[in-house]
Length: 138
Length: 138
DNA sequence: TTCGATACGCACCAAAAGGAGAGTGTCGGC
DNA sequence: GCCGACACTCTCCTTTTGGTGCGTATCGAA
Image (cartoon, rainbow over all chains, first blue to last red; front, side, top):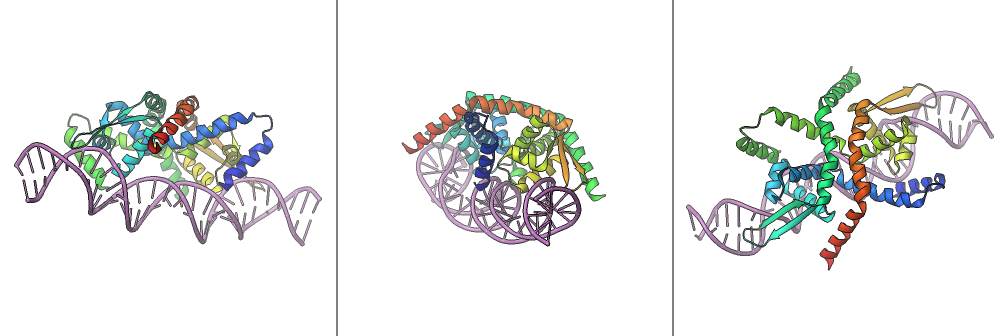
């Protein structure tokens, strides 16, 4: 918080010509990015994009390696941000469906480039990491 | 770990026709994604893409709200993953330059869609969040 | 009658993320 | 002679992330 205020103060000092509106928008964009650029969010987004409507346990199984706690949290945040719709069927045993909204589908499409990048360059990243480790050690 | 092994076992059971190679690749891709889909990494990537070569303090100022500790860590990880090149000029006071590699520039381009999404839809996200809060409280 | 299935909530705990502030080393300017 | 500049590192602290395991409600099946 202190750091943010300091940064704000610094920005204020040296950005007299930049309109103050962009600052508020940028802050919002950053906030949205920070919540959306999350490992689990990306994985759940992918799962829902690929499989359409999913139930809680099913979603967890497809994502893989996620605990119930994190799955609940991630889905709740996505629901709150308007990325998924949660539909409760009041039957027994309980039945809850999760589906992407249009907003969620748009975000999934936006992340597509990152997935492609990772698929294309993961070998290069591995190589860079090996080279770095050898440089440090050798 | 247990959850992962369970998921693996489940996957194995129901994916006899899927080649096992894709599993290793997917694991790598996920690992890369998890490290790259980070708030600070995205912000530093943006700063370097927009401003070209940057020095340490300069980079921190442009990103805004990042502590030295996190800036150091983020830049080191990006260097390790082959996203930036760190050039030390042995002068006094010290002078260190950070520049994106081709890999980094590609990733930055890949993230472009997410930035555009955030800029386009941040108002919708805010609205969804307000609606959610009212639903919960009211 | 007890068990399993579903979609969680809650409590407890470990690890990681992240911030604040102090220290470092050397030089040139005041 | 002391301060500031730069690019950090180190320590201490709080907050967040994430995992594990237990509890819950209800019904139908064994």
